[in-house]
Length: 198
Image 1: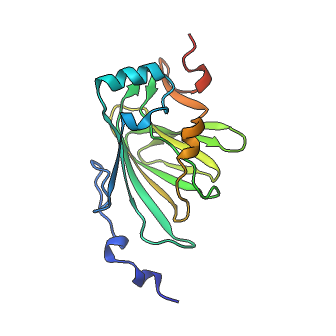
Image 2 (image 1 turned 90 degrees about the vertical axis):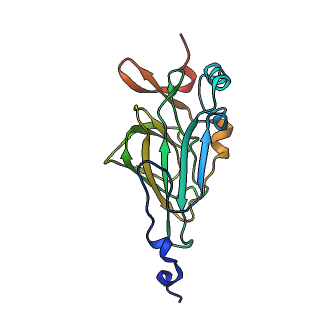
Image 3 (image 1 turned 120 degrees about the vertical axis):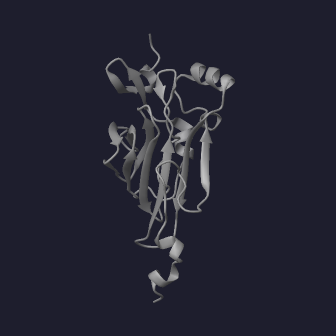
């Protein structure tokens, strides 16, 4: 059996990063702007109004995918900017894993945020803080979305099995059942159907 260690280039074994950039070495950087998140925010009127003013960068992600196969890991570095659309905090598109049993670990490196975790079969939803020096475990069969609830960029690392894959389509089709809104008492998880009732 060929050596997994010898099959990898030195650039796959050690990758440098900075908390000021989502770049992992020379890996491609994916950028998502406000226009790329149509349908994600609960307040569509506030979204459209914001988009007529500007198309700001919301988040950037790069990933290291050195090897595939049983037991191998991939990881990605993300930076999510602070801001809101209406009362809803800036967020990522969110996804399931294409291989539904795959779990993931998120490591908070800087900033204040949270993760929306939604069980695929029951719809149960939890809001879990994601801050510097914290780790969030995302079980398999769970949709997950990152939200920046602070005033500075939220920087985090995600580590997942190489066979996890990403399913964005299921989220795009129905979205998350809950959203995170700014309230006088702080960030709050609110059912999407209740988010804009007066």
